[in-house]
Length: 431
Image 1 (cartoon, rainbow, N blue to C red):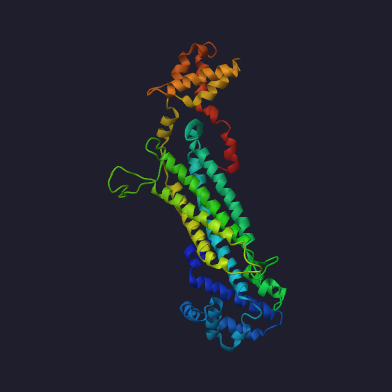
Image 2 (image 1 turned 90 degrees about the vertical axis):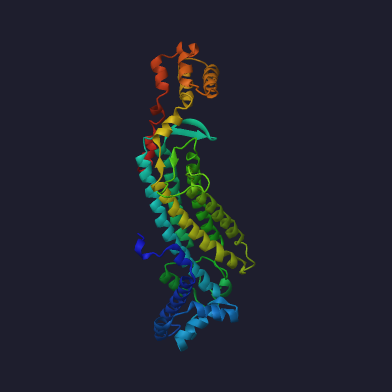
């Protein structure tokens, strides 16, 4: 179980200091592994661990001269360590440290994301339980379809987020991969045993077959999974935006005291947070495309992926983290208007119960084509009149009344007929 208080906020996992700290963590783990195998003196490792440090500003100063970030970092570390520093980075190439340390950042980021995802799961579960029996109209193509409940709509959201939780838990294992295999990955100057020990110390597993870098399909998978999370959040946000339309107004984003919706129109209460989430999802999705482009590198490595990852990895993690925070708060404080849901459900005299009338007429022996024509005619008549009333038209149509009693017609307009099997879905989700 991940403890919340041990985890920094997402932004802190991607600052320069944290990045260099993970580099040093990898270097020390390799030194410890080398010492365990007798390749370097244990006294030197003790000295390295006690003295090793870095100054991010000094690293940048050195990098400005040498034009190589890893060399600049090692130079600065050795300014603190002194003579024992000659045992640091023995047999390694820069990517051994860069890729292994990056795995540590990505794992730590996933831990934070999984906690935020759990918050969202609980928020949706609570709201779905609260509105389990809140009847509303279901829509397809943006058009009224058949009755459902708002809790059932949220149940669909919950199932989707639970799938994301499962995917991210698998992804945490997939991304927790290090490589300490040297230039082109052949272990020419370092033993695989060093890699195994160092990775174990870091909570990683050795890459199965690295080149000079860990293959970028792993990182592309990471960003694509975050893009999927963002896509679901966008789906929820778009639904809220649609349900908040003035002529629908079944739900509404919480509007704080003193909040203003428009500089020109004082009446406005706009779904600004949902709109913001929609825009952010576009950014995260775009990063998935860039991550896929990173997979095809020249031969055993090039660094065309590096400049991309400096942007897309922290940005995707930070954006997804913020989006999870926003949607969780949005769902928790969402304003729900059951009276408006009931009003919309009964629009045009309950025209959305047309299928129940159709099926009941068929049960009475009418041919499907005949029954469909009767119901459709009455439904369209009601739909095209300002005060159209499908129920009233059906109750007065002799083609219906000669087959159905008043009680049978009444039953056709009972929304509970549409909800009687929903308990099975709620049970699957533990709502």
